[in-house]
Image 1: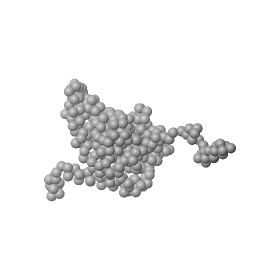
Image 2: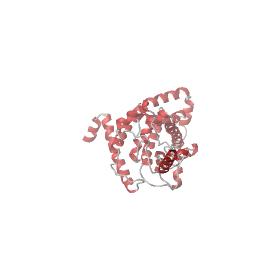
Image 3: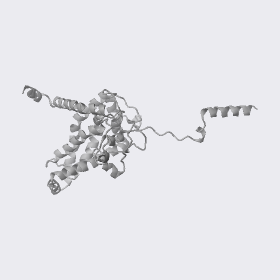
Length: 312
């Protein structure tokens, strides 16, 4: 009882830090052995940038609810102002299983487009690039995200839930939206994990590490900007952005432009617009023209012959 009383007397942020620390220990206990025994790309446990990723773990989990609260409250108020209450009542009367199923599908479609826009719109990419800057992908990379990027993609997933009445603060729907976010976050640790498992036909139904690792690769322009969905790969299939070869795995990760390894520098880098765009993958080398087809030794020989000819 003394321990419980002591915890209850702690400030809320301290209690939250303790809870997050416990969850981090649990995640490490689960994923560290799996990533050692079934590694897709063998890495040291204390790999490069692990301290930065741990910092993101605490930052994103502490900031998510706070930063999302205001835009979600405005969204809920706006939706309830323009959509008739009878519509929300009708949705709330549906069986729980149907509302949960619809919420997962609708939420993932919203997340898909928010995620896709984060790649296609340069301003949004500046913030999302932080997540893709990881050169080694494992479970900890799941929470490596700039707060602005994190809020934008989560918000895009929540918008259709509120528009369709699946999330209703006054009808228990707020809890459903929270469950969607929590499940997506927990599943995110799994799909980022550094394991080589393949799941056959199941990979076309639910997101797996193989599916999401292709999203992080920079193996070439033909495979980047694929696999945006958080949990339902067939959404990418529907919109033409799925890439999941059967007998191949990605080899390299990250972005072309090197970023500072320090967490603070990464957080402020997207605001330095005057430095130019943050590049995602190396630009392809231009095809050799007629003037560059000859080898250097051949060029030198031709030049020498021309000089001799001119001397004559």
